[in-house]
View 1 (cartoon, rainbow, N blue to C red):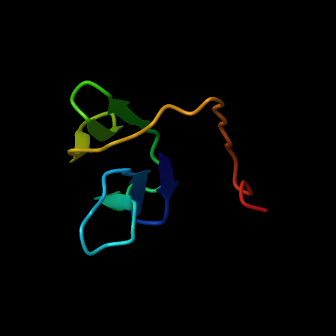
View 2: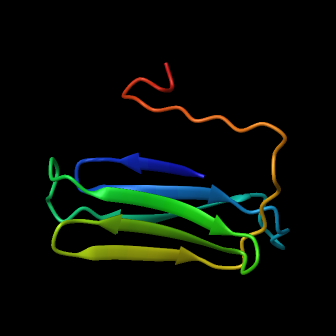
View 3: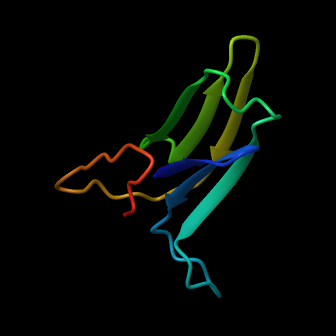
Length: 91
């Protein structure tokens, strides 16, 4: 699961191990418009429920909340978990 922030949107990406007929892609993404609030503080949450096979992307500003759902998501639980933060994570 991955969250990226560009000038006008947050991009939430996750993988899905469910086999999709006619597709070789296992990733799925959704965008949430930042509504020109770059620089405004917000809470960002991206979670997954194994019971309901649903991932949720959630952004909370001081005056509003924005939510997107991913349905029928099949994840596996890895043996190790890593978290990278910062502006130069991929370098």
